[in-house]
Structure formats: C-alpha cells, structure tokens
Image (cartoon, rainbow, N blue to C red; front, top):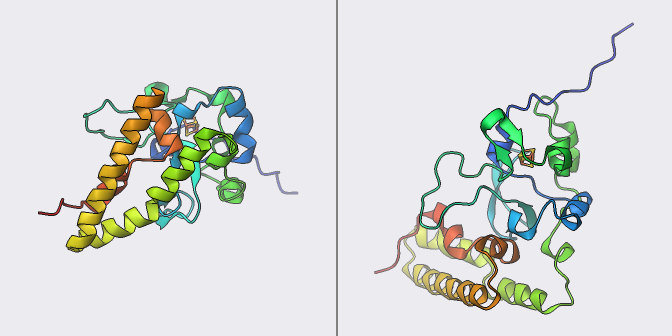
Length: 219
Ligand code: SF4
C-alpha cells in the first residue's frame, strides 16, 4: 500500500513575495471590505500594459485590467533599489508576511513546489476597479474619463514606435504623458488623495509605463 502524499508545505523563503504582490480575485473582496487591503495598498495594471505572467514566467500584454497588491512605496525622487517590486507586505527580516493570517487568495494558493492550485486560480475571477469603486458615483466618471483619454495600449504602442526612432510617435507620446501628468496633478490637488491611491484609480502614470522602452524625448 502506498503512503498518502503529504500536502506541499510553503518553505516561507519569500522568493514569491520578492517577485511582487498578488493579483486580487473576487474572493479577496472581504479583505478590502475589512480594511486589511486599502486602495493605497493597491495598483491597477490596465489593459494594454506589458506585464509579467508569474505562472507562464513570460512577459505578456494584458487583455484586461487587474488589481494587485502594490510594491514597496519609494520616496519621491529616489531610485528604487534591489527588490523594487517586492510586495509591500513583505518584511525581509525573517521573510515574513505582515498580513499572513489574512493574505490574499493567490498567496494562499501558491506553493512553488506544486503550482497546480495557483495555476487553477490565476486567471479566474480577477478583481477590477469596477468591483471596488462605486460605478454610479462621480469618482467612477473620473476613472472612466482617464481610461478613455490616456489608454495604456496607445501609450505602449507609441512608446514602442518611439523606441524604434519614430519621431512623430515620440512627440505624440510626450504630449500624452505630459497631459496625463497634469491630469493627475490636478486630481491630487483637488482631492488631496495620496499618490499611492492614484495608482489604484488610474494605474501607473504614463511616464512610468514608458520606462521599460527607454524612450528619448524628441529634439
Ligand atoms: S501578501 Fe504576504 S504572502 Fe502575499 S506576496 Fe505579499 S508578503 Fe507575500
């Protein structure tokens, strides 16, 4: 008779937490309702953005948006160092999760020795901003305006073209990123919301989206 297989046990090495926070799923909504996860803890990755697929271990383009636990906040003007994308709840001392008892679904499902559970969950019932923000309110109108005016897909397409020397694309990109910067600045001034909440409502700034393309400003 064969011995029953023991369930895999997380070694709590922190390797997955250092790669980034989890994307959220419908079953994580109670964590938001309870305040374990606030909007300042989250970042939206919008449709059309390049993103790393942790299960397939490849860069991909997002076909629909997702909301995830953000990385560690950086001081304005300070370059992020090593582990720049580590989950904001990861404490390197002791490789600990600061919300271990109430960690999101992906973290509970992820065992690097047996990835079946995370693979089954990964693309299912992902949370979007529409699950979190009241879609009948004025804040949602602003979110929708931003999405229509500053689409991530247009930005990355322009950045790709600009990176290949297309000067017209580079000029369009410069105008778009500047307009978006002014939009965020005006919104922050009017609402006094912290920068981290803006990254939930509007995703990362267009300037941040351009960083991997190393686009130079047109002369
Ligand atoms: S929430 Fe906790 S377990 Fe999940 S990635 Fe962050 S630190 Fe790791």
